Image (cartoon, rainbow, N blue to C red; front, side, top):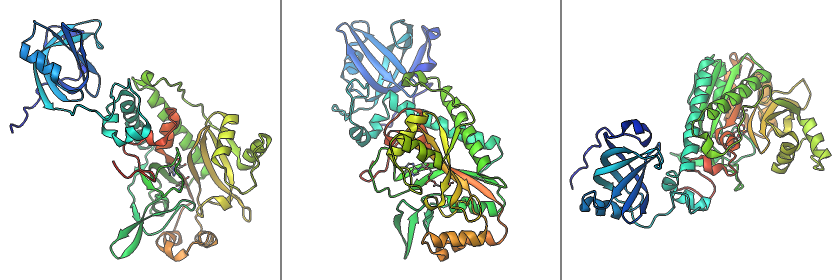
Length: 436
Ligand code: AMO
């Protein structure tokens, strides 16, 4: 078979304008739609940035080319050379009168999804044919925005002098109680996929890297199949030395406002019909005690020391209806590394950042005393021996420090008003879904 010729001087639909009227151009993309109006035939070719209208007038183009274009199945990949003609009724104000078309890859006639979105599909069907779902306008924007969010986060931390780190994802111990670990076969030993970079980011505080961040996957065998849990999620993790929980909360809210502002600059945001506003700083702060009081007034009783259920989170979200922090959590429901507020008290300097519909982040001031940390690990029923490599760093000069973890998908779904977290992951992993 002949290898395909390179597409020379290929232009995106949006790179051509009416100002190019009369010029020769070369485009390439997917056959989005075909419209046969008898004497005129329209081929809409889609690329990453937009749609070009290719117009063929029967009798004015070679019969062979006319038939070739008419026959090409939707979603085939084509390269077209032709002349630009100004046309106010076309999607971008111009049309292309073709002179040559090459079918680079012919698609099967029956498509798993309608990429024009005229016929809707269930989320499961869309995720099964995700490669094609990603060709739809709305889904594409979600992922371009996701990329923008990640860039904004890196930009934010770089400007503040943070060091970006990469910590191991194959580990020997759990960090977060509550969610189950995903075991893997690692030669002759037991190992797991990491639930959080928690222990490593803290160890780096001991190493003197006093402000770090990581954007990486976290793995959790979530027991329930919910619309806000993934088994593989992306977390933005931050750790800062010589500060308290208060300072890292300020960094977190500043980051969120910055990300909102960057998403609001997205030129195609209007296509997603969102009512987005940059949240005002500082975010409201309520204590855990105030939260359970508000819940009790709303008829939802929470026993002190109990974690907030999804329903409690939603009730609070209806009452508060903006981004807010819940602070001063009972230590019993926070991990061993959270610092107790004052000696002997059962409240920790820990916080959660809440969107009215979903928890976005959690963090704390950390225990930096070796003895207290060891006691805490043991009092949570864990073995101090399996944390030896972590605990050791606390014996040789560990500064006070604080940090948090923010779920990228939770942030995206809340900003973009998307109800199911799977929609903001290219190829989501949940209890049932291991492919594609
Ligand atoms: P936590 O367990 O609260 O804290 O996780 C931090 C944030 O990560 C996101 N997240 C998830 N997103 C989708 N699916 C999941 N299964 C999932 N699990 C967590 C949430 C959550 O708020 N080590 C601490 C952070 C710290 O204290 O620095 C931790 O992991 O948005």
